[in-house]
Image (tube, rainbow, N blue to C red; front, top):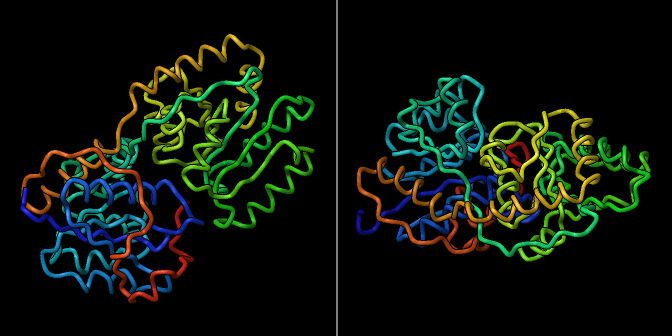
Length: 375
């Protein structure tokens, strides 16, 4: 490998925002940490929201032939910026989601490499002619080894971890849980930002009240890692009722802790379950299917035991973040024209470092994103 490999990592300003924790931001943070552990000089460039031109302004700062890793959300918001500057740089786009607009597809095709976070995303990019298949690599998210949880006798401790937003499908889960208002042995905890779509949160809260479930369902907002670990430790079943999901990092995190999963068969979620018998899959947009599976879950302690045993076995197949980092490092090395070194285990994610750069200077570091938002 080049003795001092340098990559400029361009991310949206939600990257270090504790109120807007997302799978995409966690992925970016872990890649940053993993590359640094492997000897890369990673220079973070945070693009503050506030209007078009911010992403282009950031790319203007970079020297010719610079190796650039770009979060795909920025490309989606300002695709012409990458088209304009891509030819003088060595851009690698990190695609958390597939693209749809023609302008985005043109921008993605400018990239030397496109890193997809799931096979599903890769297939979508190819189907949309957004990138040469030979330039797309898949780097699935990793999961940290975690202490196994202990199941309760009732199986009634339900957990849903995601920003509270329509595409995450919490309303579908609430509609399913309304069938069990007369059962007194369950609770459901929703962990995730309440700021992404406030109107949806208000509607969801009203629906919970109308169904008489206020005492059963709790919203915690986003949690720090240790607090989140504690919530996972008390869960019997993790439910992911998403309408759209490129991979499903929460599913992988649950299985790493030996927790069975109930999830929608959408996007890359089946990949996250990876064939484990601990995963119960239902069609998306079908609360009745969620209710049916929950009824079966509570009807049989033996069935719960089988699913718990399968989840404990799934812990042995957890993909480490160091594997993810190694794939990303290889793609970056190919784009830069040198050979990547073997990866070392990635450290735990850290807070936003002091050496973060910004297109608008230090005062832009704390700016909040509006239109360019991910959950």
